[in-house]
Image (cartoon, rainbow, N blue to C red):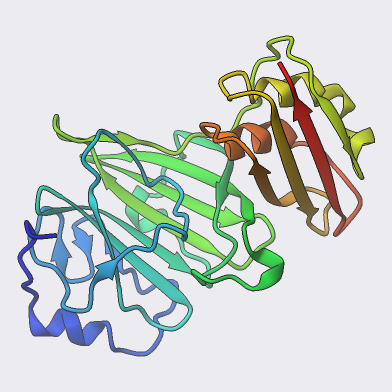
Length: 274
């Protein structure tokens, strides 16, 4: 990360060492993240590259040159991330085990959209065994604010909130915004499907098979799901023996309305040959 200047006022470093902040002590503001203004070239001294195995919603980008994503020290119960493009701070993500109110960033306006979006299962980059490899179904909301977008995500099973503030892209950097998940169109493809909740997804078999229209075939896929206390999908893990673009979101979008009994768990096995 040679393009970034390692400069930061002392008070901003000390602020990272204060006790855990409440959800209302806004780390992200309309003007920046912590002591850093949007567009700043300063980088916290304790910043480390963001681990790619910790998924952040609304963090996609378009282009061959990846931005510099950094994680900085945060109070207990939080994680904080910064994104730099061409040496300038453009985006930030605030992950909290306590609720975060997006109102101060959005003017308490209605969101542009609300929908189901996948996110992380917790704060840890090394999740407990029961959460390893899973993504969380959550409620995502997006706002357009002057010069930026704001995205809020809440884990459907509870216990995790995320706020993301992102700059409108410059010509040399493209962003891939979060979107509400939607089921794919049924392309008429066929797949063999079996598993413990097959009876709940029989009408979706064509759409599940369509998730692999761009895959190298044959392909074998394993799906594990858990439901919350209301019987709504809460966790999903998708594993395939062939790489497939946007596989998790395609399958999760297909299954996001599948109701089950409270706190249920289940698995599916899919095979598609052509």
